[in-house]
Length: 152
Image (tube, rainbow, N blue to C red; front, side, top):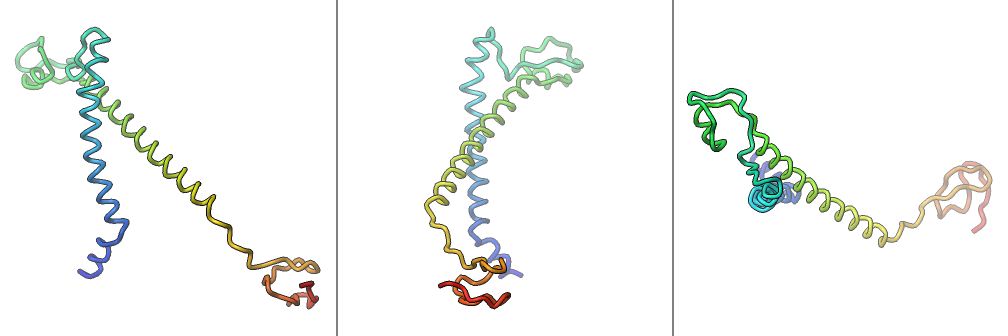
């Protein structure tokens, strides 16, 4: 069983998958920082100095009544909140990751198509008998079905 596990782990596709997961996790962190630290501040500034990380609605006040200056204060007070800004950040992060994955898959499909176009097609190994229309070997000189002699 240990030998089978070692063979499974050492397969190329498992190692590739592990590398992809590690890189994907790192990419997720980069995208989160891009959205939170680069994209959303100018968008918030254009929309009237809105800080999306603190854009929320209070559904029920906490132990200490509001108003709360930030989402962290509301949560600390035990308020029930609808975190619209955090949701917007997550949706934008998802869209960026989905776009990146789409572009990678699209590039891979184009590379595969280019490679397939360069590879010559295999020579046919069968042909049709002109007398009985049965499929026979390309090297046959006589049809086994109708016993007709074929032109060479």
